[in-house]
Image (cartoon, rainbow, N blue to C red):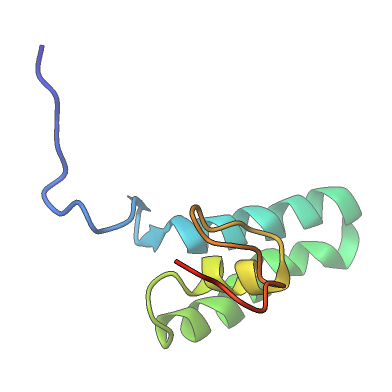
Length: 88
């Protein structure tokens, strides 16, 4: 049995030229279009056009840390964003 190992383990998964974070924004905009319809379909074009240039200026992991700061994501091994003191 053969297993294919990626050449660069630190790089995220890509589909075409979009990485995982960009694909998640595109998927969220697509779902908003499905749910609300009408003008919400314009988010499918406007959302990625606005988000991708902002993301490319930021360091890797920008979206995860932003979601962590808002309280929508957890980082394994770290306390929640509302913690004032953290002892290792």
